[in-house]
Amino acid sequence: QLQLEESGGGLVHPGGSLRLSCVPSGGFSIINAVGWYRQAPGKQRELVAGITGGRTDYADSVKGRFTISGDNAKNTVSLQMDSLNLDDTGVYYCNFRYIKWGREYESWGQGTQVTVSA
Image 1 (cartoon, helix red, strand yellow):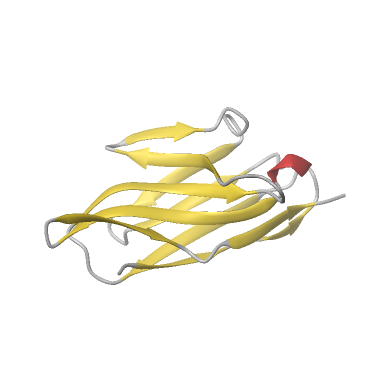
Image 2 (tube, one colour):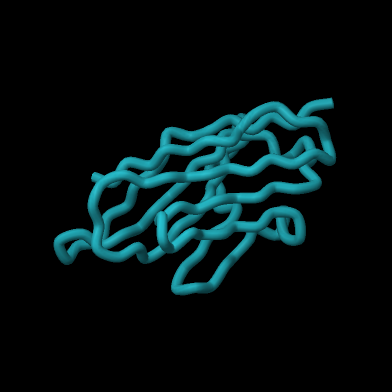
């Protein structure tokens, strides 16, 4: 299974910025989709930003503040988060959907904590 390693989380004041990165290891043929999800305390995991077929999608709550990008050469995906607010606090997870040996699989990272606090 594809292993995903996330980095870049931390503690930041409101209005600050963080950049998350996700690096895969392991073999695959094609990446169908990548995304960043977050889970706030007491809430369900939600999609924050994703790339599918070259199209990017964002949750309404982060539009204009977050930017997802991919490095095709390294197969990494990043999430630039600007103008962070208290509601952005949560554990952020990287997700890859990929093809290997003709079948589609899905992998999740272990999560990285983002805390926005005054």
